[in-house]
Image (cartoon, rainbow, N blue to C red; front, side, top):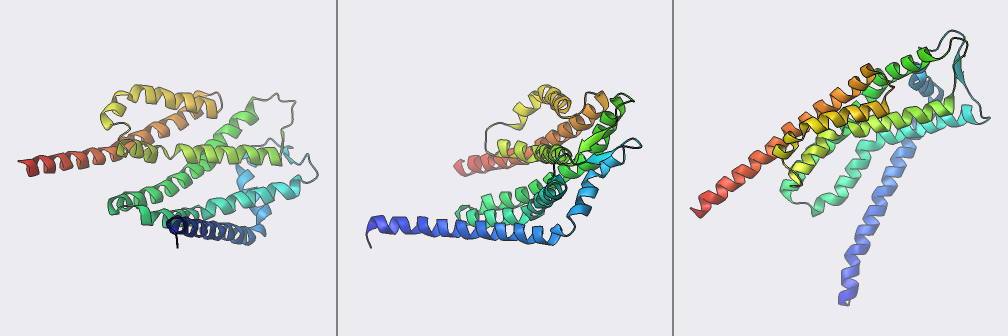
Length: 254
């Protein structure tokens, strides 16, 4: 076997392994989807409950397209199947990259993966149980009394899924902050100095995502700021580790 062929062999092996892990992830998603599909309508009723509970008497969700009664629950079920499969997908990704990591990197990566999944789910739960009732309570109360609220089920689903994704990503702030500090891009001291700008930025983001009232804006901005502070708190462990390494280096040189 030539040198070129021997260098290509590991690449082919990695590509085959990557393909197999992607296929496993797709299979799990389809398996979960098949198990949830029989409950598609019930799942849609559950997701739409924050709006339906606040609709005025005589109002309801409607389907403006012929295929919407079928496609909306189908799309929701598939999205939920992907969300449920996220831990398994991350496990497959971890199994693929873990052999190339050092022991110290593995020690840090595993808690980060677990916390990322939990925080993402917490963000979705926060959006469903807290944010959606506030948003829909505002939207359904500001319209003219003579206008009947009739929301399309497909448009509602698109709005809710985008909100779920936005809050799920927002709740990753502690992990992102910790990774920035761990990678040496910034330090806890520098981020602490920029705390006023971060606090203001949280309110700007809250203003853009939530309805134009100070209550719901604050309800998003305060958790975002607290999550940032949580990331700083975790980042202080990195600083302590660096200081210990410096002390050990100075001791060995002495």
